[in-house]
Amino acid sequence: MGKYRKILVAFDGSESSKNALRQAIKLANTEKCWIKVISVIPAYEGEMELWVRGVKNALRKPGEKMLSEAMEIAKSEGALIMTSLEEGDAYERIIDTADGENCDLIVMGSRGMRLIESTLVGSVTARVIGYTHRDVLVVPKDTTIGWRNILIATDGSKYSKATTERAIEFAKSYEGDLMVISVVDVTDEFMAQAPGLVEEMVKKAKGIVEDVKKKAEASNIKSETFVREGETYKVIVELAKKENADVIFMGSHGRTGPKRLLMGSVTERVIGHSPCPVLVVRS
Image (cartoon, rainbow, N blue to C red; front, side, top):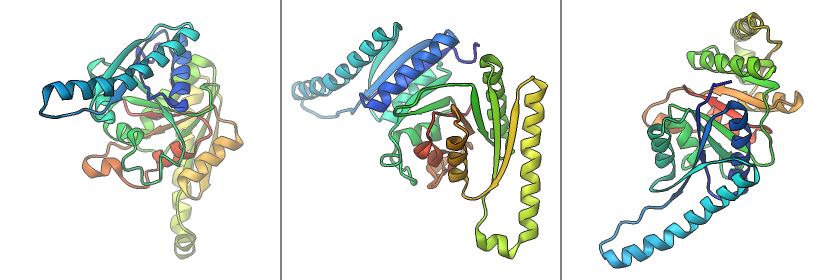
């Protein structure tokens, strides 16, 4: 164990965040680590001091209620948690708290594509993933965390290598198996115009998944490889459903500036449609 020492759970009182907290507690119990729960309320800036105090008190009440709900969940699960009520932009406060508390993992709920659209601009989850240097575990509503059947999505980049190392750590600790997929994402038109190039891309993808398989087998971990053609996020989600994956491991490219919220991010689309939790490896 010992992969994570401290977990930060973002809690907004929604059913998805309640489930995220329960799954974080489950992970913390096995990892023997601490949990801190953060709720964020809007900041208010005004001039009339007494009136502003009243507004702030009114704003804090929903936040205090959320943390009270979090404490009740922790109590029902037999867990001890620390809590923090913050003011400001949610994604900034979550990231700053994770950094300030030296948390290894941020756990958040996912409400599906209605709130996490393919563009994802404005999504707190998307912004946290885009800006943080910490690992982020996104837990869809009505799912449970597990590590016995791990799906790794890889493109051979340095970000995917970090993801592979983390997945192998978990598979070793929890006696899990790995499924490794690399997707060749090309259009039908591209395939018709450049079949030779597509063959080269498929060959490269096969080499990528075989490299991961060798690393897994060197650690006595059973693994299976897949190379598929199609729209990347759809292929990953469909395989996760078909093979009953417990969790999907993905990397997130270290984007900068506006590209941090790049529209159409594969990782964020997978999160929006995934049937299981998604661990985005950043550290």
